[in-house]
Image 1 (cartoon, rainbow, N blue to C red):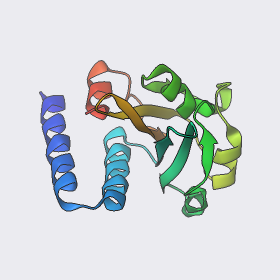
Image 2 (image 1 turned 60 degrees about the vertical axis):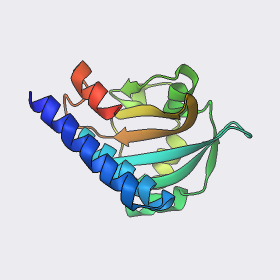
Image 3 (image 1 turned 120 degrees about the vertical axis):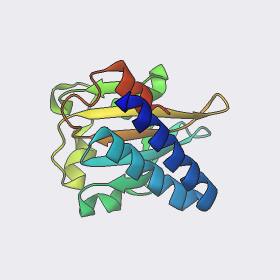
Length: 153
């Protein structure tokens, strides 16, 4: 029942954001909401450029130095976020440093110590539009199917 109430709260907040924000502000608030729901300490929202098959760092939360990532592009096949793009499904990694898909150059560049990661592809009308990636999730926040469903709303 608690998950149900949390889901309702998240949907209500998302609806408020969509009704009262321009695209840039909407993206910032959306990432903030994902970070909060996951109990994460950092996150990235990438937009997908289908013409060039790239992900664009659009919103970054965490270490203040991470802001310099905004606007950078990476191949949509690269890293854990690229794995979410390729599979079209959420990807959870308990220890990014032990995962061969992890691209440490961006984590190190941002100056953040990153442990776990959860990536969620974002789609609109059946088309990929981006990926949300949150880091250092609260223990157990993605262990249950209900939590994964809540993050995918």
